[in-house]
Image (cartoon, rainbow, N blue to C red; front, side, top):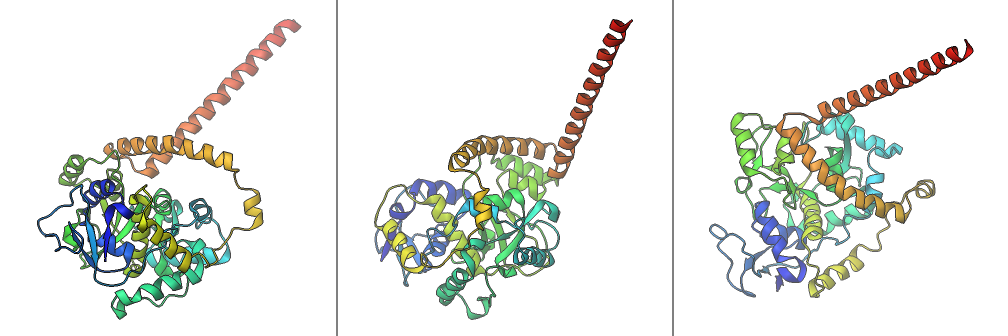
Amino acid sequence: MGLKFPSCLSPTAMFRDCLYAHSNGCDVMFSICGARGDLSEIPDGPPVDYGSTLLADITYYYNLSENCIFIDCEGLGDVEHSEQTSSSYLTDRRYDFREDIIRQDGPFCVITQEPAVHCDAAHLVPWSKGDEYIFKVIKDRHPRYEAESVPSISGINDVQNGMLLEKTMYSMLAHGKVAFLKTPNYGLEPDDLWRFDQGPVRTDHITLQRLHKPNVHNPGQLTTLMDMGCLSPYVAFTLGANVDVISQGSLPPAIILDYMYGVAAYKCWKSRRRGDAHSVMESYHQEHYSNIPVIRRSPHDDAHGPSPLQRNRYRKVDVMAEAMDDLNAVLMAIQGITPQEAAKRREKRMEAEELKAQEASRSKVMEWKKTMDADGS
């Protein structure tokens, strides 16, 4: 059986972004299909030479050697729901989850080392999917992994399903713009990936990847800053680099990371053309995942949420805001300004503006008093 890239994934997006992410395509297809196979240029043809061949902007076939255990094409769920039920949405269970994650990872973002006050305890499999969903993912996919690497997990709020992330990165994860990639995996070794390595030397790595190349990606500047010894993980990520996770505790299991990488990759790179593969993915969702109940917000939360019109307006504003944020982040990174320093500067500017407004108000009052005194005399 062969799966053709254009029937389920956009070949242009795969070509551009797989090369940017330093992927050879096999690892992506394994994460989506849950099945091993090889890339070839013709159906059931010989494998490409992975050692000397880079993905070209042509059609490839993924020739399977085992049955597929697909990801859920709706695996990210309701993104707005997920963000509104982040770790700041403090039910007792979610408060415990945040505290457990901080105990596991330490009180810092696993990527930027931002303090916990600026972070969310991010679920890898979204919280709204619930316990039954994550149990099914592990039950279905465990035959593809060695027995000792398959976790015994207590549910969606198990610490093995989470990491502490700076809030902006959490939002990108929830929207499927970034994903965690574990190496070695089926298709890639750690040395195949250019990344900002931090922490102790280890044989396996978990790396946060952008699945689309950002407009601010600047390999030359990355190299220059690295040579100067002033490249922080925050600056590296801002400029488009892959950045390794650093954690005080154990890292999430590959079975969860691979699954969610496949969910995000399918969302980012799927073809807009409808075809057999899309039908297969949607049928798989209906058969295996659609009947699993999701965790809903309470009616009180729904009653106070934004209207559809407001959400559309927010989305349009967010596009412009995101572009400005990227530009400002790069400028701050070049100047060596951390997010905390930027926040302090904004706070000082606001305080200065408030003092200026108060002074102007006092001046007007004094002028008014002088006028009244003059009229009285």
